[in-house]
Length: 485
Image (cartoon, rainbow, N blue to C red; front, side, top):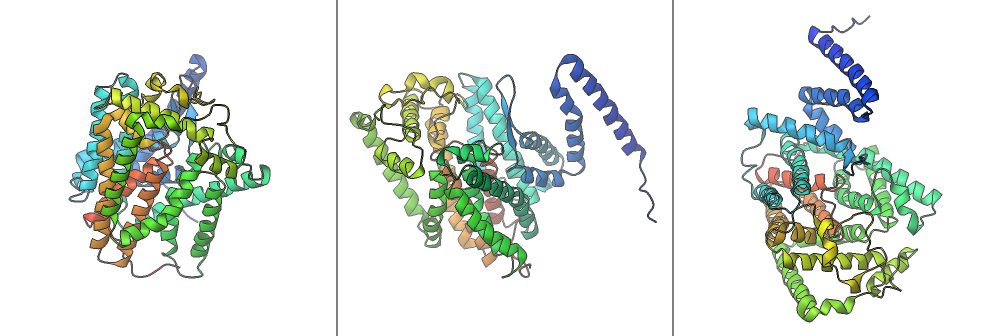
């Protein structure tokens, strides 16, 4: 017979304190009609658990990323539960660890070009917040960036240092994500018959909308391709992963999200771009084409030629019509984006250097819109932003902020290609290629959305930079003795 475990005085004391705190908070919540007080004991418990085992909490956070739900408070503020409170807690723990035990980060990590540029990007957001017309909104965005950066860049650099850690990270995200994808896919197919207009209903409450849902799938997709190579032919795990590839491709298609489809299809030429060392040429070509295209659009107001017809620009009820109307300039969601892009460009002309401050696009853009591009959804009841992350940077952080972010993006690909060719073994090369494919998918998804502050997208951006930097300073290796079954 096994002896009962001994309970120490410290454990007993903590139990009594939490019990009393729970009772007091419960009574106060009823008396003062402040329901958030019910969460105080849980918050204290999470803090204690974090202090005792922050490593376990890091992987719990990863597990919860697909499962998080947006919660709106009565005052209009919103948060992702339970992920954002976990991020804040892990941010504080990570800063505490770095302050008292600086050896947690590998040598050369903070001075790595990728991490340095990321920190410069964050610093400029802080400077723009100081200069913001509405600093409360801007500092909220800056703080949100910090609780993404610290857990997913700094803590990731402490936690993921070998093949076993990477595999644990993968399964923590994959298991809940594939379950939710299957549930959403079946709901959409069995209940709504894959109706184009019902996709958003099929993915809630775990995903805000079909764009959020498809973006996370397309971003995580390269990890699944990578994971397949970890296991032997015919093994159960490999078979599960192979089936999941088909599920993800089908789910992305029936999400009817153009950027997610483009991201997955674009991975093929992007892969060869890295293999053939064409990244610098591709970046130079992109800069040239983008510069010429934007210059032509605004020369003599050429962009006005593309103004939509208010009467015929509508929301279509099937995907084929949706795609064809996009190219014809008659899809309302596409033309509404252009309506806001034009406003963003005019805002940037008015505030070129530091922008209006992060989080302030919605508060200012209406006075900069051009009525010729107005659509029947331009009242923007959902208070969404410009639907292009690069334009959002331009508007809210000025040309300097956009320049820093673009430089960071280009350096990730150019320097990432160099890291790829410096790797000594096939496993590490494959890992770097997968990380670059993930970043490519993120960048493509940001063309028609601004989800880098979303917990379905943002964590991967910061993790990719952390992992690339770890490979660069040779603080991580995927080389193993053999494949697992």
